[in-house]
Length: 158
Image (cartoon, rainbow, N blue to C red; front, side):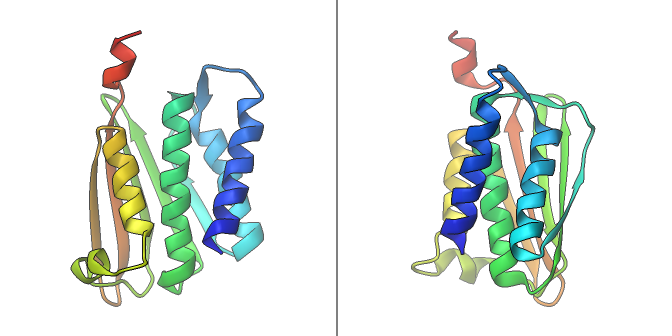
C-alpha cells in the first residue's frame, strides 16, 4: 500500500513539474495530494493553510514526500479516516500532520525493525535542515510537527 501511494504521489509531482514554474503553490498541490488519499484509501485530508504559499520545486518535492509518508502512516496504523495537515510559513515552513486515531508509543515506534516510515520522514526533514517532533498518546492520536527553514543553505550559493 505504501509503495502504491508513494508511486501515485510521485506521478502527481511529475505532472506538476510540467508547468515549468520555479515556485510552486504548496496549497494547490497538497489539495491534489489529498484527493489521491481520499480516492484510494478513503482518508479525508483537510488542508489548513493560506492559499498562496510558494516554495521552490526542490523543497516542494521533499515536503510532498514527507507529507505522503505521514499520511500513509495514518492510513496504515491510525484506524481513523480523517487527517489534518496544517501549514504556515514565514521565516520557517511549519507543517503539522494530525490524526485522532489509536496513537502509539513513540519510543517503541522508533525502535521497530523493518518499519521505515518515521525514519524516512526524519531523514528527509534533516536533508532540508529541519526539525521533526512526533507526539502521540495511546487512544488519542498522533501529531507530527516539522519546521524547515525557508531559506536553505544551498539556495545561498546560487
